[in-house]
Length: 165
Image (tube, rainbow, N blue to C red; front, side, top):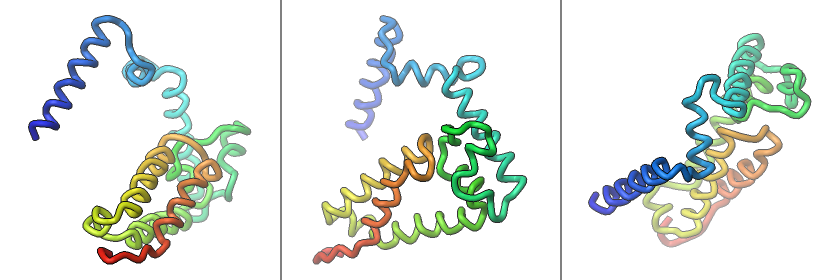
């Protein structure tokens, strides 16, 4: 707890220093945009995409509109909702959403319990890869852009033979 407390205290001190000197990092600047009226350009657009995605899904909730339909429905050829769950709901409906959730949970089951993961470096690496691509899929990309997520899910299902598993 002491080490974690020190890391938090140093982080808060560093952020306070950045604010006082006006030398904000690009990450802090993007976070601050969320607290401005209208959320700024990028965050405001995403909020609009999220709202549109929910409206599209509510009008065809069971089967969705088909893969690749979100940009057509939204009128933006190269845009997407920036959230894999929302895009799956719009394009594949509840059927696709349930299948996707099943795929996520089943892949995590194959990877093993935390004890098995903790004692096996390859499993730990696969879990770290999964966390990285999964959190990225929650804020960016469309279904084809998240192909690395599906590749990592395949790695998770791959049976790793070890003495500790």
